[in-house]
Amino acid sequence: MSIQSTQPASFSVRILQTAVAALFASLLVTALTPNAAVAQTQGDNSPSQQDKAMHYSLYYENLKNENFADARPDLRWILDHAPGFPKNDDRNYERAVELYAGLAERAEDENQQRAYIDTAATILRSAPEKMEAAGLAYDKYEWEIEKGRFLQIHGDIVPDGVEGLKTAPYHYEKAFSLAPERIDPYFINQVIQGYAEANKQEEALAFMDQVQAKRGDDEDVTKILSTAREDIFGKNPQAQIDFLKKKLEQNPGDAATQKKLFDVLTDEGYIQEASKVAEQLLQTGNLPAETYRSIAQMQLKDGRPADAFGTYEKAMNAGADLTAQDYFNMGTAMRRTGDLAQARRYYREAINAKSDFGNAYLAIGDVYVAAVSECGGSKMTRKDKAVYWLAIDMYERARQVDSNLASTANNNIQTYRRYMPTQEDIFYVDEWEVGQSVRIDYGCYSWINESTTVRQPV
Image 1 (cartoon, rainbow, N blue to C red):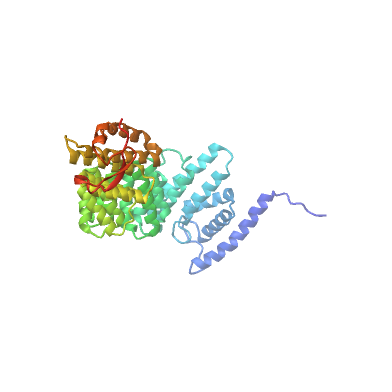
Image 2: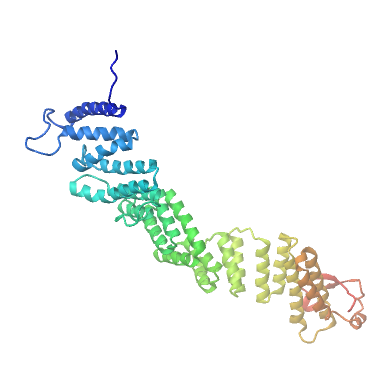
């Protein structure tokens, strides 16, 4: 007849665990004490090494197997009676946080879950002070990282008012201040994003300056800083201007920073400030071709056409591949200096680079109109008026290659048709006959040297 056990299964498991723990404890005590026979000092109420080892092994095995509820009483005993066992360090407090976070994860009741998280947060906050008092070894940096991680995961349910716990980015930044060379770039990025989400751009930039100074040689960190600055500066260009000016104060000869400042000032319309920076850049010499181009465009906008043209020439000498727009700008610069022949030359270069560049045809038409004003003045002769035929040819060509310019071209045609030679003018010039070709290459217009068609007067 078999005898049935009257004890619950869980009790049997507990008996087995205790037996195993006792065996482990005896081995652990042997390892930890010079004399294995020494268990407890006579007359001393403190727990024996054997008790410490037993409770430690019980909680550790259960925790390792994620039996959080079973591990809890033994871990609590260790924290109350031997928090530094067995190595006089912080492992038991770390595991206590892990245990209560595990209990919270498995809790079905929301209030119970919050209670467990509250306990974990309290341990996390109070442990450093207790470890200091007990003389335990712990890493302040690691504990700040641990606080940040905990809040990053559980921050939405951590009760308000837990003293010593702020936000994940706050603790990551504190960890950075403790050991900037140790912190992973991920946590640096978390600090920056925290400031960005709180719309604290100045604080973010100040932190990034610290990171740059301490970890500027780290490629991953540099990428994070670059991306973050672009994001911040995209929303606040003035912050970028201030940042770049500060960098130049620290390193006045930094051409890359000067170029960036020049670009931002130009984009934001600070032309006078951009001009000053441009002069500093030009003095350095050997600039990239694109930098010369950018400066030339700014100088043209700033009303300095001769300077702009000279800078475009420097761009060409630096090997820049000039675009149709660049040649157009050079033509405009020459026109504004009064050199109409050179203006036409570069407008033609723009057309050579882009055959449907309608604005260049419009500009050449305007050059011919300007030539009439310059050569004919208030007393236009018949041959002065003939130049308007050529101007109208250019306006017509502009609307042919670019329909978007039709309205402007038509207005110009209507305006200058009134100044074309009259029927009487055509009658008195022997070589003029409607529909025939005539060349504009005489007197003040010799540089034009281009043919047009005698038009029917209006």
